[in-house]
Image 1 (cartoon, rainbow, N blue to C red):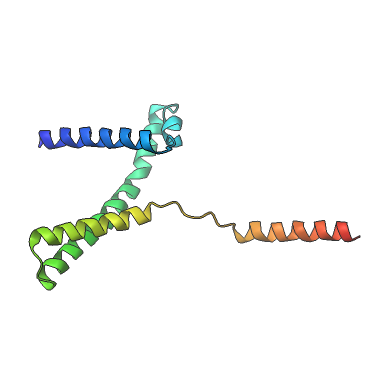
Image 2 (cartoon, rainbow, N blue to C red):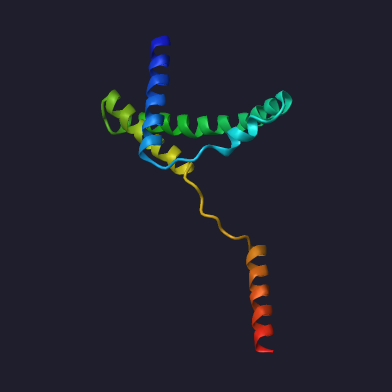
Length: 126
């Protein structure tokens, strides 16, 4: 178990280094912000993230179990194939949930932009 944990850390650092070398990456701004807060604020931040982390685990494990069950019992795939398919599909779901969302202007912002444009047009016309 300890060996697997160490292997996981080594692989994670190796992949992180490889991605930093090959691709343009940005530092996480939250890490910089958290380095400047007090211990109580840091504790509060981590307590506030617990529901999010639990939600992420549920979004991952429940589909994994359902897909594994379906592939194994309904599609008559081997246990290993079922686990591999479930792992890939849940990784895809998890990745899709973490893609950046397009920034859409709120309706209030859109209405203000239309109002400003109308005022500008009236000034230019008059």
